Length: 201
Image 1 (cartoon, rainbow, N blue to C red):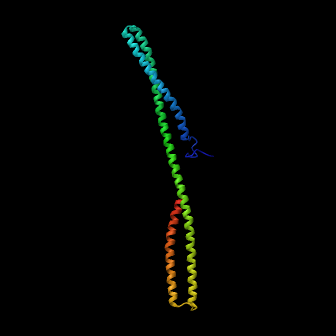
Image 2: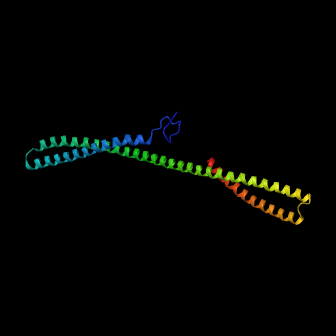
Image 3: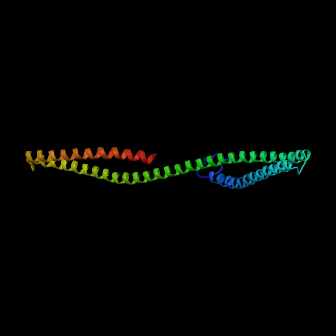
């Protein structure tokens, strides 16, 4: 059963951060438009209140009329302010959700890049491991060759086909070659172990 990338398979309530962003972006745009309309309404009510005050000052309306009309407009403005607060609260909540979703997406992207780099490192390590393994097998074959030469030289010496001096010189050369092989084998073994550690991660 497949699941969204980055989600634990057992998490039945997982929601893709991209879906969250898409959902809240639509709501954000709609609410921002509503918020702008509410601010415009508030300005209009404030303008109406100022106009009512000027009418009172000029004597167009009486004090009692002014109080009635003013109360109606004030009640209207109070309701608009309350709606404005509700919209602001929701916009704030959406902002938090969008930030959280963006953070999740950023973390998921960082994890994806990390995994890609790890896989690339593993691939490179595998190629090097295979190459070194072949080299290690060749050093083993070379060691077997030297050991065979040693046996052959020992047989020649026993049969008197090789002088003691020649035997000594050839044995020294064989020891030198074996010592060089041991150094190479030691380095290769160490590097193979390092590569194996990388491949197993």
